[in-house]
Image (cartoon, rainbow, N blue to C red):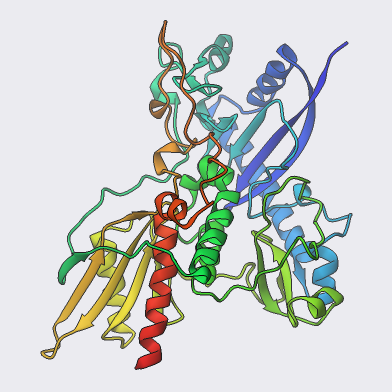
Length: 448
């Protein structure tokens, strides 16, 4: 008797994820299932383009229908009914901003067909060009070998030619330290002592760690103007600047949507629009309707999410700029943008998914601009090179006699990594600095 396991399949189109689960038999039958999926992708270039176009059209119709009949709502009560608990709204059946992890469940196999970058991905770490998956004598399967990291596969170039292997990541630009203004390096304040600073830094650390799985598996595919990049960074700066509203989930748990599973450490919640009151709003947030982080629900005529649509904006008097790499070149761009906004002296923070740089802009008596800028500071223990979307060369095959090591991106952070102010400073220096930076900016505005 075959043992059935659950698999996960995802399509990515227009930056959104279409995910559902499927049943497959354990072991050899699972490989046959994936082989059938690969066989559906035509090897002939002309047929491949027609097949690709048909899939994109299908996703386009699903995207349109989801907007027309699911995600666009007109009232707060409707938003609550759709977004938090209606059993007929299953996030797996509709395009979502956040890749569905379906936490608390174990999947035998996961594959993704990325229609944006034309990449076929198996189990998060194996990436082939969608147009040329090596299928002769199941080369794709024979090329899968253990990597130097435990429980992590890679592709053997001795079996699969390198020109067929790819990566969906956005290439990080080489850091350019040059700043087009007179400047000097400063050290950001990462020490947290006061109770409020410890609380905010701890909240930021827990929130960022909640999305560790998504960042490690997909984060390098997100551009600064993408929905998830903007939403995550806006959540962080909103909490760091003390603009966020916190809910004691132990005292009054929020309703869960069908996409949530027991065991979630923390649900990030945004108030995305001013809407009509409901019972939950009266008890907690007044006129604001809470939604899960990454929710695509939105009011008519408005965009999903809480974040600004731009990648550079003002928040509590601080210029926030979202970039892939916070180097000197982007510091120069941010400073010029702030000056064009008629701000001669101001503070700015340059944020990537992994690092931050802190900037203070001063205007001298002669009108010359002087810039104080910090080195890049790690937001958390998560590193860009850990991401599973990177090329297989980041995960070389395990050689004979070698012992596989744990993959740092798959290792859970120690339970005590946020236990004390000192641990927060050591493990999340960028988040601690972010809290202090917004506090300093607020104090300076208060005395002006």
